[in-house]
Image 1 (tube, rainbow, N blue to C red):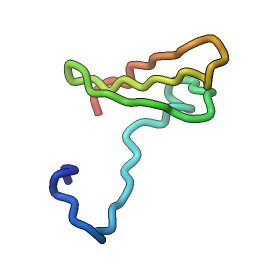
Image 2: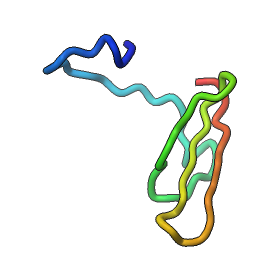
Image 3: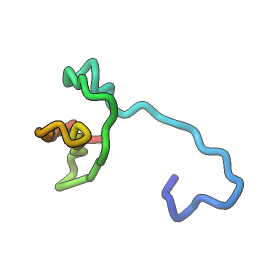
Image 4: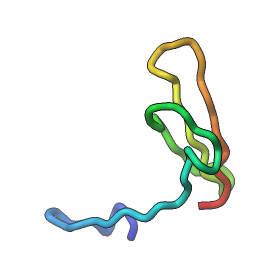
Length: 61
């Protein structure tokens, strides 16, 4: 389902695409951003200002 197809009051379901903790040793509390770039899913976390940023290429969604 595309975001444009969602209607008010609709019930949405989740689908696990990648397990970041298991597949990429992602120990951060949360993913803060995601983007599709050239067909790959990229995930970013800025660690809430602790001084470093982590980008993970999670591959094809």
